[in-house]
Image (cartoon, rainbow, N blue to C red; front, top):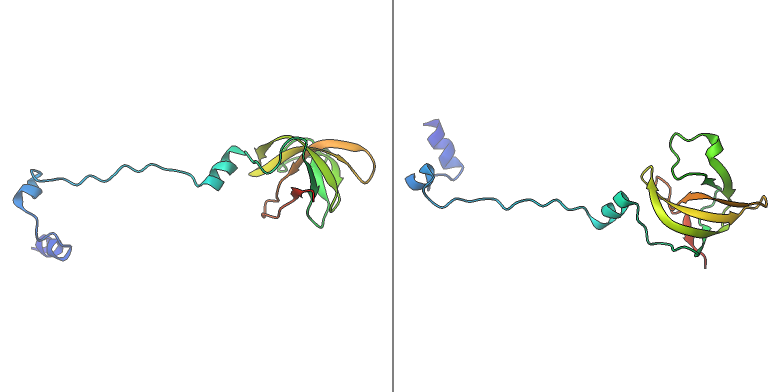
Length: 137
């Protein structure tokens, strides 16, 4: 009896014997096709189209930004930092972006304020989402 009350409470009171036995029409849910949002897909591949090789860019932040020998920042020795960009300093994009440590990194060339020309990698934005690199205007 409790099954009958539960069934009626859930709206199963209009089932026919054929439906219960599986002889009636059956409902089959549509298959689920997982898709990633566009921004998430770009983050997964590391592909960014914000800059192109040969384009001039600058440090948008109000702080110095590390230029690294290799893309990424987690678990790296201090020797991975090959130079620093000062606020507003310009640089040249040398090639396509890559993904490391969940950030998009660009290969760049810059003449630092200390004088030498440095080639290395700079993140497009910080881990907290602060934009680092921007177009030169």
